[in-house]
Length: 118
Image (spheres, rainbow, N blue to C red):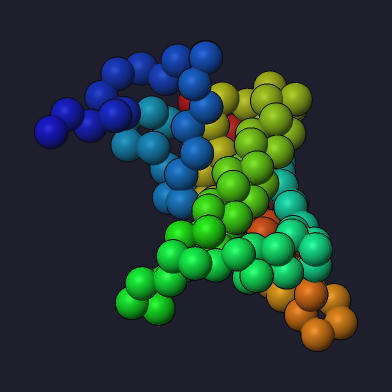
């Protein structure tokens, strides 16, 4: 299997990684901490929970789809912030999930990392 990082970084593709380095591509400049947050509200959660019909083995495909979409949107927001700073990668990314609101009626997905140029 060929490593996705075997070629030089491209400007049309932003590397996002939980590691602090990208092997073979030294950091030229640290640009600062970038974040992305998405909150999934109570109505969406109730709708998802009410429409769960595909629970198999304790897993819900609908619920997982909502979480995946929220995570992707939070990462995209973080990438836009990094791009605005002139970065072409985000390293040291951390993804957190937090239940918010009265009776846990909302879920927040937050991501953070350090924008860099490679």
